[in-house]
Image (tube, rainbow, N blue to C red; front, side, top):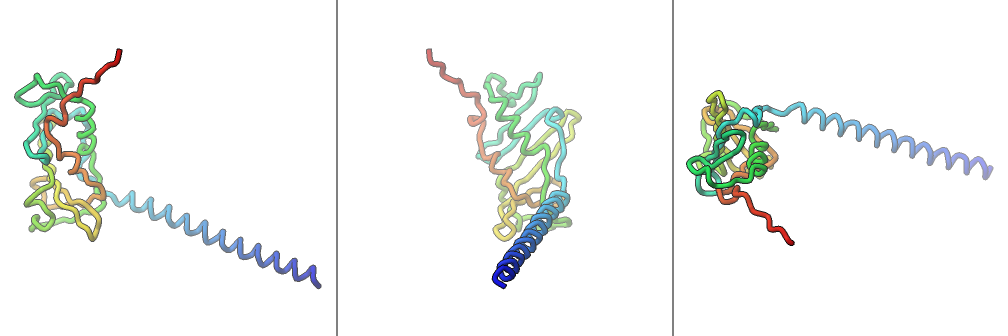
Length: 184
């Protein structure tokens, strides 16, 4: 009788473990499906290639910074004698040539409620074919935990979970190439 109770107890524990494993695997699969669905629900704001960008300007750190690409080298407009950190400029372009948003609000008429009357930053991209895109970065929404942005001339506002506008709160001095000191 005692053996039967022990066997029954072991079978009960195994049954509980199997049920727990079943619900654990089911929960894991549901989470993966939700992540996949959320990735599929992204809205393309802008999809360009860095190689097609001929001019690039932004304001967010005070003064307007204007850059032009000449012979695959980025220079300050009006002063090509300033040596700029090409890697920093390419990194900045990475933030804006391919933008995917989690939220899309169409038909907006009052842009001030999204912070576009006092934007965090504004970025203008001019392509080699003279197409111009102006990206305006609005404010942060604490309820949705998203940052707003829009393309100038569009009535659509997008929400992003990352603060891309933050990267453009810099000046031309921040883009200057820093000479590395070598020790001998």
